[in-house]
Length: 169
Image (cartoon, rainbow, N blue to C red; front, side, top):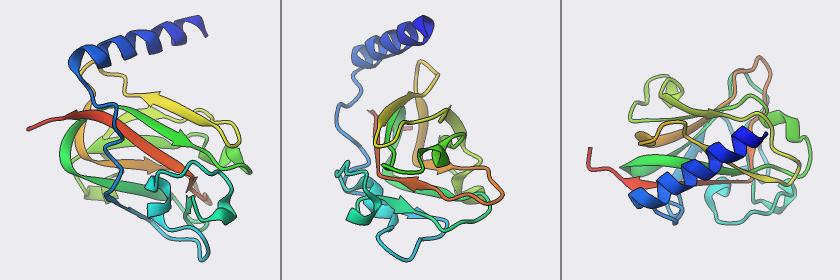
């Protein structure tokens, strides 16, 4: 645990020294997902700025139960992404376990083959957790995907925030 904390502290120092944005670069853009649960679950709910973790309050996105569900935000510009912060729902928190955060410019395989930033180990119920892309220069790309390899998975996200620096690429 100590080494993880030191890595996070070192990552934050690097981020501030290279001038990454403290603003959520996913705010005000559009998201999409592989399928949409019929009620309360639009993909854009996960980037609405509302951290409410109660699904029935229409603040979370959700797919239907399916094979390999995914969610994607188009940042509209190319960024070096350093941190992705995710808020989980208040129930069934383990559904996000093992999901991959992928970043890149390709829409091949719906963007799910882009560079791996991090894998979600777990996020507590109603919790928010930051995932640091494990490279010093961030992961470059326009699309941020959250992809769950599963035979019968449901992907629910209550808030996704993306922090990085513009990259003229």
